[in-house]
Image 1 (cartoon, rainbow, N blue to C red):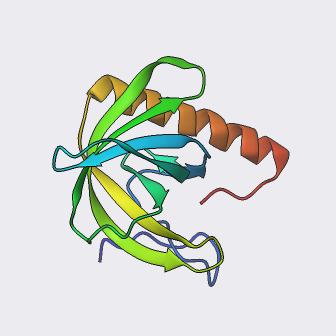
Image 2: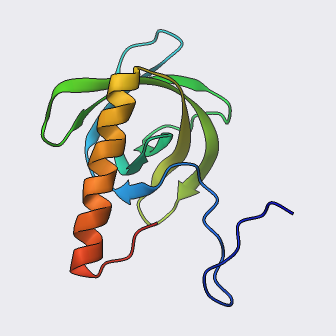
Image 3: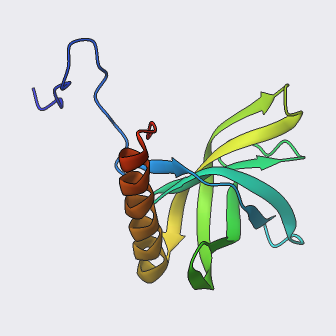
Length: 130
């Protein structure tokens, strides 16, 4: 089998293609050409973002996303599909896992570079990376 092996007994192998790191920022999103609304991110990776919103968005919905990236002057723009959705009762918000379906390769590279720098920083600080 070509399954990745766990590095330690009982450890689950990492299955995402891109590592994600915690990042809180405002994300502008729109669905089907509707007006922009604001949500907030809780994590980001080269393949997607987790977005918290006031509204319940259906699984499979396609969103146009616009968000800043720390230390990058231009705004990141991506189209993504909701692949996970749940209600967070504690925050009283809907949380959506979004997989990028269209993103400028330069924007994706900036995100990957940012995530790599955060992973390095967190590793040095001894924090956990998801």
